[in-house]
Every structure is written in structure tokens, then in C-alpha cells.
Length: 405
Image (cartoon, rainbow, N blue to C red; front, top):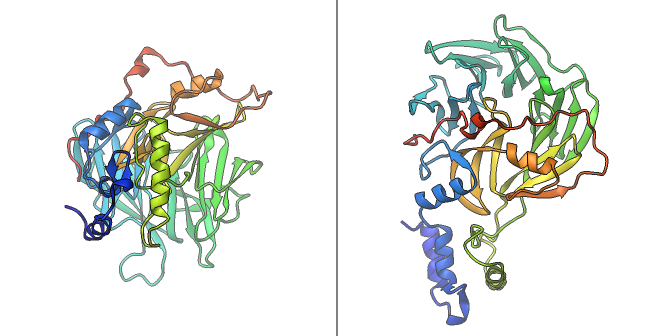
């Protein structure tokens, strides 16, 4: 069914002349295609072509707020607008996490223990938050009071009994703390990091890789765990160090694109596309301000700290990136599009290992662009991805679930 606003746009476009043809069709038809129903076969084809597994039905109402994979990669926590759920990728079941509405991302402390941040208890006299500790295998739930408010940035600590998070203290400063879930005790996680930006500050720590990232309103900074600055990264929205410390994923705003030019790579020739873009620009210049003329897709970039290079992933758009702990150099993300074409949201999983190996050898694989090339001299001390073994050909990741909640 065509939305009412789109119907109004189509009526306005109904008088287009033959000169307004756009790539062999009227621009009215092109606008309609921008709002076309989800195509299961198209998403399956494009995802398979780019080696992306999707966790849910390709055309479901997948409005994800947060995601997190369990250490084994079998269970996926996902948060929708009305609560949290766990997908079992092996038996394809979906279970509700029995808590109030989470206030931010959850984190797995071990395969059967999930930490979920909650707001103040009903009737509380302060704004302090709580951590719900959900034991998946035993279906038990315990709560831990935390003397901080607006809890977020939850991540596993240095062992199963510790949880790293950020929250506002009573003075309104965002602190980075380690929480001992067995006692409820809090301690500064990074003594050199006094506090973050209260509204936008976020931190990610990879203890094994000796890396810490901090992001604020102007961008981010990558540190060693002792507080030594490695590099400034202006304009980034998230910085996600790989656990082993060589690679760092960045979430940034991609280049703006028109919602009326969503074409996968093989759908037309470059010459034809340029003609269409020229016609499109001419048409858009004549439209009122309320017509959406461009969107900004979420883009993933990769830093290679050993080579000193920076790359852009072009095979997909996405955010909520995380390194998939169950299989080295695999990654997961909330899918926004593939091959420059916006698609229905999903949780994607893909293998970056071979692309990273090719880049290390000086080759540029399909789906990767060089943002900053490696300098002539590189640091030989950083770790190198292990060569794939035959077992790596079949990832230990859940197959697509047959249904979407």
C-alpha cells in the first residue's frame, strides 16, 4: 500500500512529460520504486553475493535498537522498541528477556548470563539505575542496584564477575566503572579517564588488545590501556577495537546519497547511471524543501594499526558493529544496505578475514576502498590474522531464523 505522503508526491509528478523520462521510465516510477515493498529474493541474492548471512527474515519488521552475540555465537540478544529478546540460532527459537524496558545495550558475561541495564525502580527516590542479570539456562533474574544513572556502554569486564559500564554520578559527570556483580562494588575502570561527555560520551575497551576508545561530540580518540594517545579520529561515531589489537572498526556517516538512486552494482552501466544522476539532479532542483533529497547511510571503516592504513567497506552499509567473538575476524552489524542500495533492516554477519589478508598483501578486494594507504614503513610488532583453515570455510554462526518477531 502506498503511504499517503507518497501518494501526494506521485500526484504532483503525474504530469511529467516524455522529456522527464529517467533511465527509460518516468521519475514517478522511480519515486515509487524508492518506496517499493521489500523483495525477499533481491535481499537473498545481494546478501549471498557479498557473503553476508542474515539472522532474521529478510522482510520482517526488524527495528533493532541494540544487538549482542553470546561468546559462542549461538545466541543473539536483540532489542526492539518494546523490549529485549534472545534468538537461539541453532533451534531457531526466540525468547523474551523478562525485564522492564532496557535503557541501553545489554552485554553477555558468559554464554548463559546476560546483563541488561534498567532505569530506576518504580517509586525510587533517586535516579540510580539497575543491572538485571538474566541467567538464560536457568531462566532466573537477579537485580543489582548501581549508584549511577543513565547506564549505558555495557561490556564484559576482565573476567566473568566484572562488568564495565558508564553512568552519571550525582554531580552529572559520566563515569567509567567496573562493577563486581558478586558484591555490587564499583571501582574506576580506567583511572586516567576521569569522565566522559555526559550526553554523547562512550567508551569501548579491548583488554587483550591493550586498546581503549573514547568518543564524544566531535569524534573520538584511540588510546593504549594506560592512557597513551594513539590517534585522534575526528568525525567518527563509534570506535570498536578488535580484541587482538591490530584492527579497529570505525562507524562514520557515509557520503550522502539520493533515495531515488538506489541501484545495486550490477543493475546498470556507469554511463547509464551518470545520465540518470544528471536527470535526477535537474528534477530535484525544482522540488520544494519538504522533498527528501538525500539520506546519509551508516558506513563502516577499518583501521590497520600495523600497516597504518584505513579502509572503507563498500559492500554493505550498517551500524551497531561488533567483532564476532565466536570466529576471529568475523563481524556483525545492523544491516542498512548492500552494494549502495538501502534494504530492509536485519542483523548481518560476514567474514572479513580474506579481505584483510588481501589488503595485507597489497591487494584491494572487491567491496573495500582505500581511504588512507599504508605508509612505506610499517610496525612489525602488531599481530597478523591467522591463515584460514579448512574449518573456517563453514562459519560457526547461526543460520537465518525462519521468522522475525
